[in-house]
Image 1: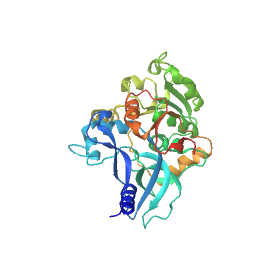
Image 2 (image 1 turned 180 degrees about the vertical axis):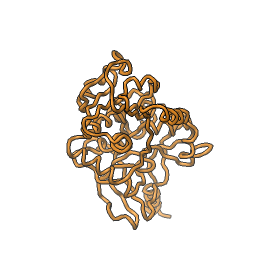
Image 3 (image 1 turned 90 degrees about the vertical axis):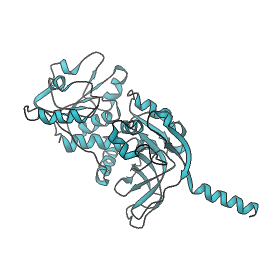
Image 4 (image 1 turned 120 degrees about the vertical axis):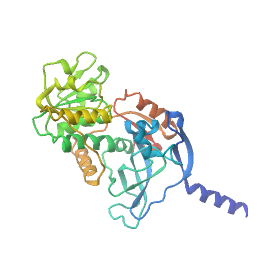
Length: 340
């Protein structure tokens, strides 16, 4: 083989691989490593995205730790499957599509969810990817999907929030909470956000009618009551939260949810008009489009706390695990993602 042929072979081999974050074990960020692996290939229904930015959320920490244990069935048992890449929420440019894909084409700017978002390329489908709002950068768009969809499904679908209802968001500056405040407002609710002193101004800018600084006031001991409490923190017992609920109020618990807490909620529903309700959030094209419409209408704005480069993903997930984020944590995969 000549020198030129060798060079071409190496280029072809490099083009067939990508840089990615790979999880090699269960535990903390030390289980994440930067390596080159094979670039994914879309099947007939698949969409390959050149990732410009990805965002992390609490679920990524759960999968990294493998605790609770059922999470390991998503990653691999008894250890992560070979070349498992974390990350779900992303924004980027369509690289190629499968034969059955009709709504997207190479070159389209998209956002949504894809398998293995913490890499240069990730796979999604027409149901999990839609056109990126033009007014958002790739980094901003990547901050939306999983957390904003969760808030939307909780408030619009599970709780069926209606205009004039009183909604309290506990953890209003966190990933789901910041979108919960905005989506509840978009649904016509009167919104109270609960956060720390450092985040009061941010939560107020997001549209909260009232902000409670939990370092100065405990909402469960006040005189105000709410039709719905979106609890993304889980730092109060149900008996405490129900003091802040209207007689027929609802609580959507999302922090520190366990099988025991779910069973306890089912039992309580038999004896009180105050309910805690559960829901499952699944990604679909229509709901991604509805998020984009809220963005275009100026009713939904991503809030980014920090950005990290791809090789800094272990530091980023450590920060997410600290549970002190002020908005979303974004991984910038392509350097221009923050300004494009």
